[in-house]
Amino acid sequence: RIKEALTAEGYEIRYLPEVDSTNEWAKREAKEKVTDGRVYLADYQSAGKGSRGRAWESPRGTTISMSVVLEPKVTPEKLSMITLVMGMAAADGIREVSGIDTKIKWPNDVVHNGKKLCGILTEMGAGFGYLVVGIGINVNTADFPEELSDKATSLYLETGRYFSRNAVVAAVLNYFRKYYSLFVKDGDLTSLVDRYQSMLANRDQRVRVLDQRNPFEGTALGIDKTGELLVKREDDGQVVKIFAGEVSVRGI
Ligand code: BTN
Image (cartoon, rainbow, N blue to C red; front, side, top):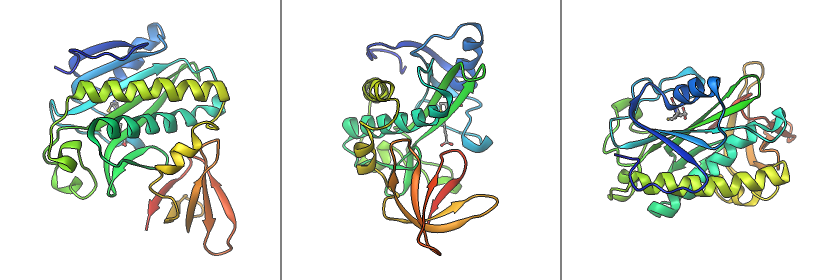
């Protein structure tokens, strides 16, 4: 069981062996009462949700599925930055426990050698009243379905070692507490941008920016203190700011 011996100060942790989706569980409870800093943790999700309406499948007992409820103390236009803050916390927590040289694929996938270790899905409830930040981490997963094998990896597959999921949860939440309070204090990513930049997998890489109206190619330069990605457009050399959630970016 994942919950035993878990210490992450400042968080109230709710645990179930199995749930449909920790994000859905968190939202159901938040409809009754929002509790800032409450964490929903499960060993298994029967209907895990990925980004862009996709399913997020994770085998029983080898992964982390958790969701953190926040009552953000910032204005709505800043909410997308919180997902980047969690991405950083996940990258650093995983690195601390496993020694893996984690990178972040903007805005918030934690990757190693181009394969995904962790995904984040942030949802908003009650207008902008609360936020559910869901994190899925592949910890001890030994194999993935064929179609994911070149896209997904786990801490176990990268190191040949098994890890305590409690240790990973605690490390991620401890980094998140620190990074989130810096974000709230600054009102943006000022104190975090250098650290984020040093882990940015897309940095100086050619990327394709996928936007329905007007896709283009360019070089990713880094992020600014609002978390937008700066991309130097190939055809005219202009630097364009990309807002997370609006478009997606692929490496080429
Ligand atoms: C992605 O597609 O990269 C986002 C994956 C997010 C998965 C996590 S697991 C815990 C939380 N509950 C869900 O149903 N999804 C998120």
